[in-house]
Length: 159
Image 1 (cartoon, rainbow, N blue to C red):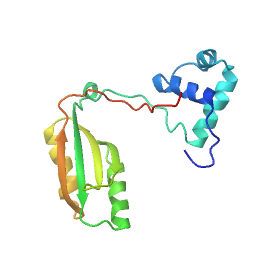
Image 2 (cartoon, rainbow, N blue to C red):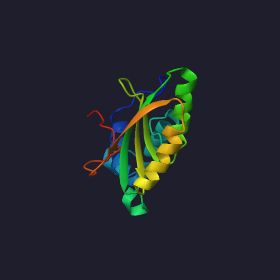
Image 3 (cartoon, helix red, strand yellow):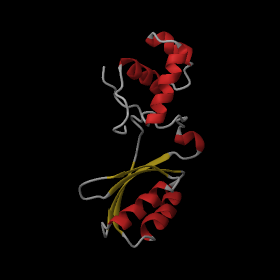
C-alpha cells in the first residue's frame, strides 16, 4: 500500500474480507453484512482501488480445466546481479504468459517462478527460451508439483 494511503478501518477490512471470498458480491449485500449503505461501500471500494489496496478484480481459473495441468516451481540463479540485468530478467519473466508468479528473492536463487504448462514438452520449450537462451542465467532448478494441496490469493486480514 502506498505510504499516502489512508489507514484501513474495520469497515474497510470487513469489505475486503467479503471481496476476497467473492468479488462479485453485490454492494447492497456487502453493505448489509458490514452495516453500511451500498453507496458508502461503493465509495470505500473505489478509494481502496485508487489507493492500490485492491490491486485487481479477476477470475481465478483452474489450470487443468483449460489444458494447463502441470505446475512447476523454478529457482533461477543469475550470472550477474547488475541492476540492468536484474531488471531485464524481471521484464522477461513478467511478459511470459506461462509464468504465473515471479518473486525476486534473497538467498542462493535470485528468482522463484511459478509456471503452468500443458505438458513437459511445453516446459522444455520454455526452458530453452527463458533459461538456455539467456546468457545471464547461471542455473535453474525445477520442482514439479505432484498435487495442488492449497492454492490461494487471499491475504490474511487483521481482526
